[in-house]
Length: 321
Image (tube, rainbow, N blue to C red):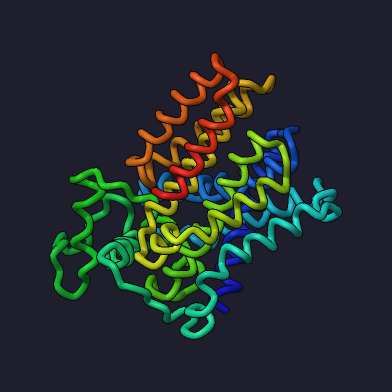
């Protein structure tokens, strides 16, 4: 069930992203849209959760309505873009999403939702913080006003986002999944990590597709990233925000590249803004890597002979972050 849950998350994010692209009438390469969609889907969820939480809604009260809105968007896409089911590409994407899960298949099958991996400090933090977001609004204090109530340790994490300005995207996304499933944070944590790893692989495929314009090259890039030992270590070390940050970083690089050379600048600019906003909410520490990509991209526009080499170097650097 845990493996099916991870794949389901990837599919939900992908269809949400594809729905947005369909609504905005994107007419770019279908393969590119398919690989960019998961990053956009995660970004839409995080921005919506952050906005609702800042208004004051506990995540548990908006988790199901937000899911229903996503289902409606997906229904719009499925009824208006039926051609997707006739393309082998969709099946290939799901196949390689499954490959991204293979390195973690054994513990997911053996322990299911009870797989805890290393129980890193990050897992403890995100689990407790998501518990607070689940029951309280972003800046809401408990009725007693005592954030150090010994009976609810999660209340102490009010300080991180409200006083220290700590990023809260990963916490909110985890709280949303807990609110939908009814499981605890530690039960869905590793499935969420594995799903994010599959989305990183899809983003790497999109970056490769920009350079090679070959679907086969994108698929091989996805396999290499999915089987990367360092990314596998990131998953088992439970670095949730870092994983989500890489998802947005790859998508943001693709959106920026298309914004600079596509005729439909506005629609790609919207995608860039969405991904950058989600990145700022979830893991702003990787923004310098996006700045590095912008520099490499602009230099390559003036010296076209170094484009393939620079992009390959940047893709390898993403794999080893």
